[in-house]
Amino acid sequence: MRAKEAERLTTLRLVTAAIKQKEVDERIVLDDAAVLSVLEKMIKQRKDSISQFAAGNRQDLVAKEQAELDILAVYMPEQMSEADLDAAIAAAIAESGASGPQAMGKAMALLKPRLAGKADMGQVSQRLKARLTQ
Image (cartoon, rainbow, N blue to C red):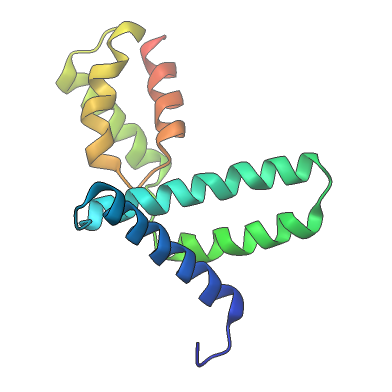
């Protein structure tokens, strides 16, 4: 606020409002993992909005959403490298004994808590599916 960063201030207010809304709705106090899930949801919303606004040729709104996305990304943990992600997927496959696409749920159940906030779960799902269909 003192630095006069209006976009950053507005985005952080959106984050605190979303966290408080979830706490009020569920009548709980959010822990770090739940706050990360709120941030992930907000990031996913921004990415979806960017693609929709780009398709509608609204570059002004794309720029606004991209600025918010950049600010939100600062508060997320560092993303895993592709090699680390592949290693985690291989470990989950070995641990769950998954041998085909029908066992994808078992492996995802192991991966989701381990990779929360560290990787895009949509990308993890695609990589896991590709590994299980080979």
